[in-house]
Image 1 (cartoon, rainbow, N blue to C red):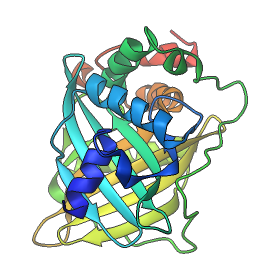
Image 2: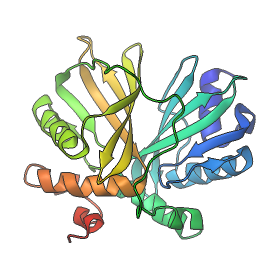
Image 3: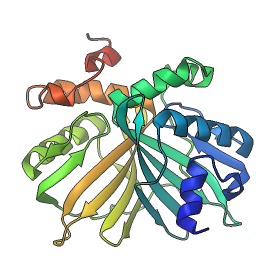
Length: 268
């Protein structure tokens, strides 16, 4: 079995032996990490079923980590799941961090899970500032140089329900992102051929918002495709509300499907 296959099957909960006994799992829907292989595998299987995922869309590995994305029909709508698996000292994975997109359709998955599993119903309390315990490895001491946007870049947001196209529009959206969540604190920026993977933390309403990007590059080394996943779910809801206030006059209703974005801010 290849390393790529190992990683994908581990995320689906189909290959427990790829995980250490003390593996730590962060889901996109909850705040606390889940500790231990037995519990982690149960939750991974539950998530895989609810997100409707199977074969991976993208897999990349290096000596420290594996990165895997999936697309599924979670509760009838297309959702994306991004997994970061960190290797332990023995080569198996000691940590799994999951990010998801887009928020309104991920909400359908969360509501489905919360109906039968109290973990997904209760572990969303933002009464104190959320500070994550991972992914392992800490932050980069430098700011990586990222490629520019191509003229026809496609941007798949962690909160918008339609793809934004074109460098001009995507540039406006990215400026709004930074206005709300501040300068990114980068954890990982790694290139794999014509793709790059970036992990960073931002801040929304005093809570840490974690993001994972999978970037596709064109022949000019410009960004042709950008898929952005985030966690945890309740912080993403706050960001969605704030970005709605900035961009509702620029982006049509196809971008704001699902719950009114202002509900999360108590401003409906």
